[in-house]
Picture 1 (cartoon, rainbow, N blue to C red):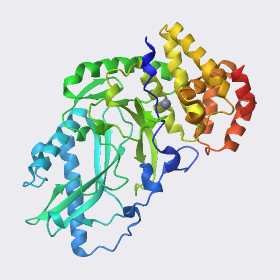
Picture 2 (picture 1 turned 60 degrees about the vertical axis):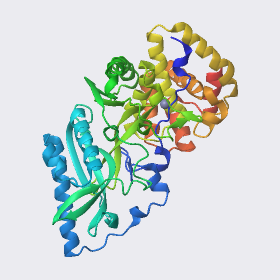
Picture 3 (picture 1 turned 90 degrees about the horizontal axis):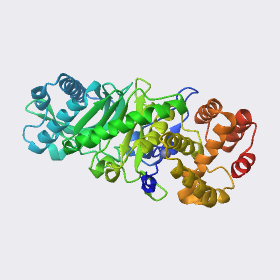
Picture 4 (picture 1 turned 180 degrees about the vertical axis):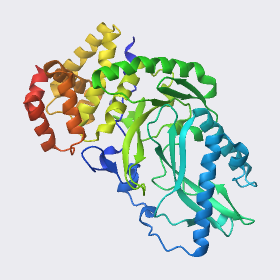
Length: 432
Ligand SMILES: [Zn+2]
């Protein structure tokens, strides 16, 4: 194994968990809205008051609801004519695009699919589509068969218009500029795709790259037991997106100033009837387009670790989140017999990274103080904990911090409780 499997990688735990989260309960944690931008930035749509509907508005809303229900039923039932029958007959591009989406969703295989109007959103007039045309914010709730344990929220914006007394879907990008409509495109929106399926894994690739899909499936099936052994957890199923289209990977998914090689992106599921609160119900792994042929079991083990642990909550400090993922990856590296590589790697971190270690690297310190060695330093800290206290206690420590507020007091208390140590004492022990 050459050293380059790690040169351009590195991964954010997630984009934005830190700013979006509002702790809800001990067991789950919820956010007001899945996209991090929505909470912190001014998004007018979120505060638009609901106005009392007139009879004609109520009729429109009822027809739109019926149309959304029929759309989902057509996809689930494989009824293309019914699906196409809801689309503006005069908009060939829209029809072609949605026929592709239909085919892609059929290929991926859905267990459930629901489209719901977002509560509290006032339909926005879209005069360019005619006198009676309105854009709606829609929650697409999609559950991939054999992979997702619950439906995941995907934001979409559809414009509906009345044509000859019938409501039709006439456009799908009138709300695209809104800050919380998602920074990336879903794989089914990006043209033709191919799917490679195995037990608990589904890989989405470009049509000409089935071989790479099968390779990634093999790598994933090697990574999964390593993750399960360390975390005592695993996702029931995991979706891997390995497309060449740059729109599948958000520009903000970077780490240390360069794009991540892959990201474990959290899946959000509504937890109340109004769908105003969400919880993390798993993750999907999106591979950077330029890394899709190189992504291997080690990278996947790292990402799968994030995926397995993220439902626990978002309070764990960066050194623990990344250190644990690194730990799993390095254990697999050792299991695969790359002992010389591992020894060299460890030596480099001890020489270059550890001397700079002053405090346990949390956000802000993580890349700042140790730069490229941030992950390695965090790995050595977690490895030290596992060696000294054992995996079960490290897992218990992780679980407790994950559901705690991400603050120094909680971290100090957890270090004292689980390891009878302090930040300073732990740093000193690792450096020894
Ligand atoms: Zn990571």
